[in-house]
Length: 553
Image (cartoon, rainbow, N blue to C red; front, side, top):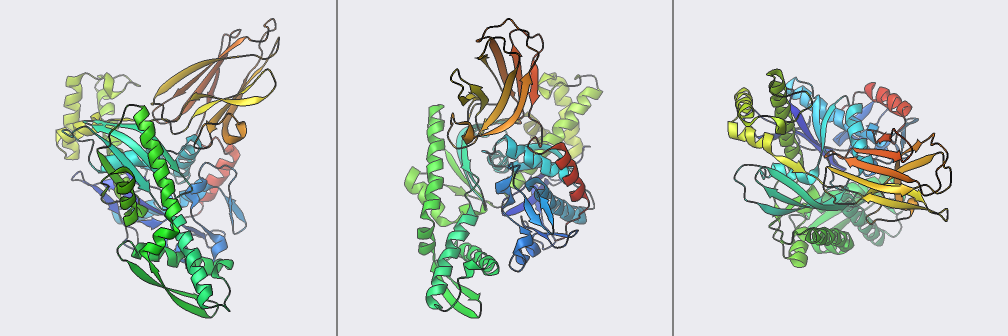
């Protein structure tokens, strides 16, 4: 039997880890505090001591310069670094400590190491963010079996891949602690198909906390005019943000709550109502509605005109005003169920799918029923049915459950557009898109470009990823992924000679680029590899530094 594949929701503010138990049910494993979620906060206590979770979050009040939080918002930004204890850390390296802490909790409970994992990401995450997430897992010593979109994981958690499910279109509204995404998915028997997706990695519950913290500060200053503004002091600011987060959570189930603000010898007891919070943060919620409308409009353009079900995912989606606005703006009747843990549970189910798939493939290959490199789809149905039956017996699961898991297809879309930087006859460089947001995966796209001078001996190929929510021809609005050159082109070709470029992207979002000049026999191959934004030297150094430090809770 293969290793257990754990599902990890690596969140902006909270993270958790899940597995499928021996009865086939997903379960979230608790941490040392017996809580299902762990704050995604890392304290660099000394130059060799790292603390993760609740204790790190508490220390943010008294040691803010050495506490890293909201790191997920910087995933994929190769220039971002967090400085602590005289050392700089990238987002993947800090995230690796969170992953190691989750794995450590599991090992203490089960006695077994966590090796194989599926990690979730927002559906709108681009290539850089996805590769940075995978790199974080590798830094943590894990085999990242797959990266799965959070809405897709939620669909698995809600049981939509099971046999007999009626076809329906689902909108997944995912408002987490630091990121927001919204996705339209078609669900049918053994198929989960993403139709459209969009989101904002700078929008989440932390922004609600910040708005409320500013309000509390203003009220505090009104009641204590001789006091200093708590937000002008890093320690006071951390206290106020923590108080704001707690107040926001209280207002989910109450109409009002009292917040005690103590700073620099002054204190004030401030009453905050749910209506006040909603007024303070109305523009944030409106932004999520704008993105929701954009996704539904994009879905309509692809022929999907009806939303049958709306799922609320992410802890911040528990705020009553979220469902109220979705009803008022769209006429939806949202369903809220297990929003904090659904993504991790779905990742665990998907992980079991990948685990059993590999067992089935290995068995078919061992029996000579399948060649190396072939997929389950290439297997004879009789042979496949027998091997599935054997796997079901081994796992103690019904054959139809294993058959559903193995047979369920997941079809994703491009979360961003990709293309080439091209130079016109006027010498101006522009961005030319070959693929676009919401194109179905896998895909192969070929386009032809042309040289700009006679006897051009070299062609530079610069591959970019869409930077903003809208496509832009301005190179500055996009992110350069990788570059390469077709060199040694023989003379004798006037300007306008054809250069054929092909983009091939698999279901996992891995992009391969091939460029061929009309005069060349061999094409140029480019592959956007994991951690492409970080140099091999940086990766090797950081991995060594992460290996040396075992995080504590």
